[in-house]
Amino acid sequence: MPQDAPPNGGARVPAWDRVAGMQAKLHRWAAADPGRRFDDLFNLVHDPATLFVAFCRVAGNQGANTPGVDGVTADYVREVTGVPGFLDDLRAALKDGSFRPLPVRERMIPKPGGPGKLRRLGIPAIADRVVQAALKLVLEPVFEADFKPVSYGFRPKRRAQDAIAEIHYLGTRGYRWVLDADIEAAFDNVSHAAVMDRVRARVKDKRVLALVKAFLKAGVLTELGEHRETLTGTPQGGILSPLIFNIALSALDEHLTAPWEEGGAMSTEYKRAARRRKGLPTWRVVRYADLCRRRHKSAYAESRIMPTGIAGALVRGVSRFPESA
Image 1 (cartoon, one colour):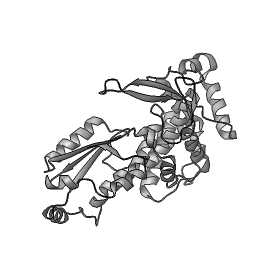
Image 2: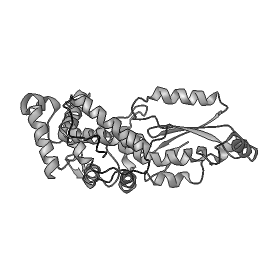
Image 3: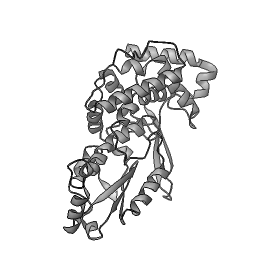
Image 4: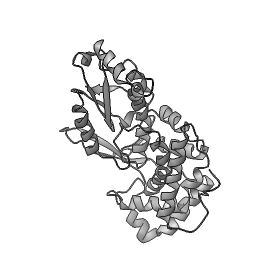
C-alpha cells in the first residue's frame, strides 16, 4: 500500500473512523487501477479496529443471538467472555494461523412466495461471523470499484426500490419487452473455482485467499446432525456470502453490459438502430441478486433474447443456468 497511508499506524482515531478511512483508500486505489492486485490485506483484516467494527455489526444484526454449531451468541460474548478478550483471542488465532471456520448450522425456513417450499439457511458461529464481517469490510471496497451499475442486490446504498425505479425508467425510453429470469438455487450453485479465480484477479494476499476459501469449504451441520461437505455454493446466512455471490455474478453483468461499452455492438444509437433493422435485440439489464430483468425494444427480438454467450458467462460464476424466463 502507499506509504502515505499506513493501515495500522498514524494518529489514534476511533475505530469506525479508521475503518471508514481504510475503505475509502482501498476503493480509491481500486478504481484508479482496475488491474491492481492487492497484497498485504490480511493485516487489515485482523487489525483491532476492523475486528471491533466487525463485531459491532454482527452484534447489531437481527440474528446476533441465533447460535451457530458452538452454541455461542453475541450476548454470551458480551456478558460472559467479554468483547475485548474475545477479539484478542480471535486476532491471535488469525495471526498465528490456527483459526479454522466451523461448519455452518443448517436451518430450513419457509420460502416466501412458494407454499410448501423451504429455503436453506447456513448459520455460522459468532467468531466466524466476525471474521467474515472483517473480510467484507476489507474486500467490499475493492470489488465495488469493479461491479457494474446494473447490479442492485446486497450493495451499499442500493435497494430493491432503486432497481424497480430503473426498470420503470427504461420503460419510458422505449424498452417495452421484459425478460424475467432467475438462477435456480443460485447461492447453492456458486462454483468455488470460478469465484476464487475472480477474487484472485484483485487479491494477491495468499492469507486472505486462504480465509475466503476456508469459509467456502467449511461444510454444513444438517438439522439431522450430519456433516455435509460444501463442494459448491456459499451459505445464505453468511455475512460474506452476498459479496461472494456478487463477485460470481459479476461475470454475467460484464457479459450483458459489454455491448454498451465503447466500441461495442450497442455503444451508439446508430449501432442500436442498425441492429433493430436487422431484427436483432437491443437490451438493458437490471439485476437484483439472482433475479434478472432485461428490457427490449423489439417484440420480434424476444425470440432471440438469450445471446449465445450467456450460458458461458453464467458458468464462469455458477454451475447452473437460468431456470425460468
